[in-house]
Image (tube, rainbow, N blue to C red; front, side, top):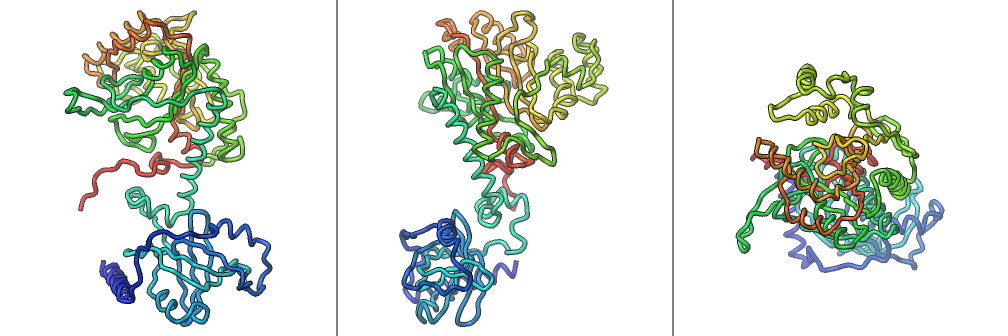
Length: 494
């Protein structure tokens, strides 16, 4: 603590000195000629130890990351959004007055440099400064150069520091941006319309989750942060927008874990006249295009496991997976009492309200999901846990629905949409009964959505994909907090 206090006091003295010299600490604007990355590329063929061409100068800007002082000269490293470069600051070159100002600069300050390029004896491209300018003074020191920012909690709470000192972290978020752009390009090329739907909804629907609740004073009504955009997107399909997608923020009042954040990003899309089987093929195509644009290959390593995305991906029915992969006895799949007994033997928490289908879903989560490393479509989910999915024509107890699993995690959920308004009303009523029995994640009755369906929803396939989990997968990240700039955390205790 004392060391930090001394550093802060030293910086305060430098700030006072700069102000005495009339140097603006935070001047407005600055126009570099090149980014550092562009300079590195432009002068990549510059021979080692060639003298700088001092008549040809360029202007660069960035944050000082290190300083090595040698009395009347200094080497610094500075970085911008593209890369990092060395600069040589020499008193004889920039003059005594500017050198005096430079000596009042610190690691963390933003600096502008005009100069010419050369390579040192170690062949490092360096800009020889002819002029330096303070662009923004840093009042606090950056984390120690060699230790970086290692404390996980500090990294999440002060992401700006994490981005400054940990280049691999910045790379993760650049990859995230490329993934989202690739997704957007994929759907626009296929004649989908990007849309926006309400984030505050009078009835939260489209998923089984506990919502956040608020109150709108002017309207005098409760509103909920959306848990999914599904029911609004399907209203748009009713309205004739046959192909729509939304990259959206959703909010679920649930626990926080390495796979869950209360606020997260989803892709949802709906295609008229498509089935869930069509969406399996579309999903394979989507991932191939995203992989090509974001990482440049169709095979990745995630947590030392090789994952190959070349289609076709494995497809296996829900009940079959429970038996063959989860080793769940066949009689458990249809007998509620035996399902309870078996689940309890596996130390799975069961409540009195849990139906047979909910118990099977819990068994699946524990015994099957971790085994699904390669991309796998699990299809044929029970109707009672699929309130928005179309019943299967051959077996009405299951639905035309799949979930995609990769590396032991659920990545996507899709189905042929239920478009029978009478059936939909009955499914909502079943959800209402579950909610009245104490299930806070059961869905609400949405009569307006049923009314929309009564005007006619064409045969439609729809899917939701967790963007954060896709980014985790393609950046080899083990926690969702590593791929969200500002994850939610408990308030810091002083």
